[in-house]
Image (cartoon, rainbow, N blue to C red; front, side, top):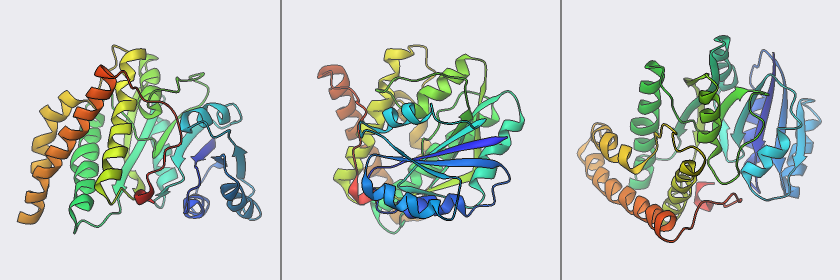
Length: 295
């Protein structure tokens, strides 16, 4: 089995760490590692790694956005399994082996890894990142995986069988639409919590809101292409399932007090998403849009 690993990046200051976290892993498979970016700085970093690791390749994209870059580079891949990640995150040790394991089951079409926050829990925004990663995404994906139900993935670390889907629209979240296409073809979507990806989240409120609105809008566009999509990330589901998960996470009084502003912040995010998509008809568009405090 051969793996095609893809890192999408745009002027990421720590792209060297993202590449290093992959090439230094013990990967018991033949693999190629494509670093996809429009900028010269990323190309230069990639060229340095190519001198020591023959698997590393650089693919210059035209700078029109992540989804467009993925669409282009996927035509160049020749692995049996495609693994995608980002240049602003780092894969944990053995994450590649762990995300490939579920494919031993021929019914599995897509696998997603576990997003782990590296922010400090001693401040409110840092604590929020752990609530959303652990009590939110992790617990929901684990529960859906155990029930063999559909689950949405994380583009921070996602793997899927190659040559099953030809392409995907550019104005929708690829980490939701790609799993949906596999699901429609009869494949199961799996969660591999031991395949961990380490993520730094925004450290100021404006960046936090900007990132959350963009992510939510990318998922709202799913209704345009897949009205029967079994939504996991939605305002309704967050109200029904989110509050008790969040309130069960705090370990002390300070963390408990920080949880209530999180509810208000999430409501503010969803209010903006609904106003933009339903009232103003301002929908998600693929583009490189940096959140500097998350670097």
